[in-house]
Image (spheres, rainbow, N blue to C red):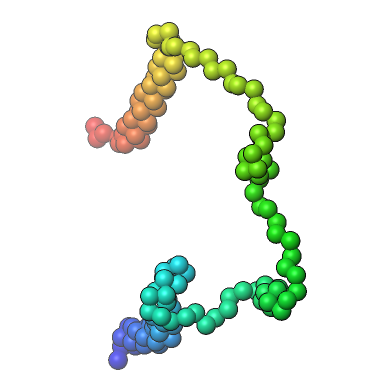
Length: 143
């Protein structure tokens, strides 16, 4: 065998060996979202057997189930949401905002000047570039 054929054969064998170790675990992985897996297990009657709670959460659940008093519930709503839910008006009423509508007065010469300057700069840039390219290609002409 030639060196190139040996090199190619070794690369192919290495790729096959890597594929044998990488592909089976990838095929065994469930790529569905957790919600989809839960819905599928509910439909097919398969209960999830893995408890994904942290050890502290499992201990707290066990103590509550053992008859010990549950910790006080914490209201995680914002103070304004709690006030409205309890029938109180929100604190710190904001004064109404004055909105002033300004109608355009016609042609804006400032914007036109900016646009004209940008256009002139772009034209100068293109002319300079074309001159550089043209002058860079000049060759000595035979006499």
